[in-house]
Length: 423
Image (cartoon, rainbow, N blue to C red):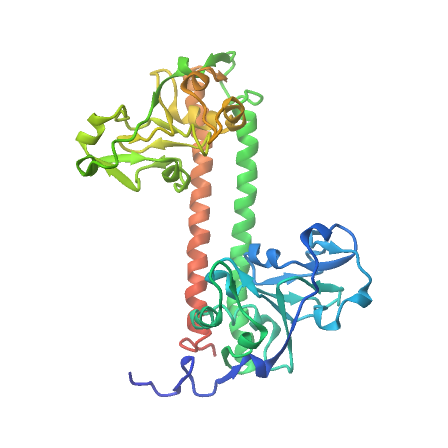
């Protein structure tokens, strides 16, 4: 392929002429962390970075001063810790082991201008800059391109656990723009991070508000305007017909891959919304007729009674289930959405009623005997509408956050390879 003017072909792809390519070993000195187990950590002592906290973090940096109270601590004489394991502002910490290839490139950049004592721990590789060729904010983004991740995957070794050594990390090649362009790139990507942070906080706030609304509205502690009638205590089988699922013979090909959606608990846990319309497997009409499964109408509640007891979704299409369900077809005066939200608050009660040695399961009899307080139909509908609106708002915010993340990923790929230049 022809290289356009102003660009050159390098080991890491086509980059601007004036950019350099350097192995990380020319930029950083690498060392290991101080070994301490999770059990040794507490709320007292020096700040300590456990490799598991890097794996769990959605960020690529940690602000020690801002996050001081949340950082685990280790009580230990500081003279036992090598100075190379003490983290300073601008240091980068990589994990040296991961359960999958994706995790081998996990890292954080340390923001620590007050020089708070911060110890890098077990299964970490500390990278300390040899010079000032990389801007500290630029470090938060420059290891996230597809090319850098491919290099990590290439050098990672192991089967059940992927590991990478200090020697191999030092071989990774990094394209490096001028400091002024690094700062411009970091500012642009940092602005997107600010937006992402604001969306994440707003989503957390909305989730808390929804949880509070569930606690108040579904117990009758708070009533919506216009409703005063007493709530009635009823058994679940008074509110809905309870239907068990079944599985056709797996050895009979004619029973499978038909037009009927066939739901398993895995389909339920893999569905993020209230309504489920897709399943991994389907069965035929002959398959349905061969077993005791029933075709459930749209709006039925698919309640897991085995494995993930209490997980529930609403059927967005005609569907049948395997035997891991006690599905509910609501009676005419019962709002299926109200009952959906109400049952979400009763998972612990279902688990308490479950029995079994190989796996826990709540029986049809015990499911039917669940007692719950319910208002009359109009109030059920009104409560469900409030909670449904909150769900819709949350879904819209989460979609916006996900689109912003995708935008950042694409922008990062373009800026960090020089395909897009900032003036």
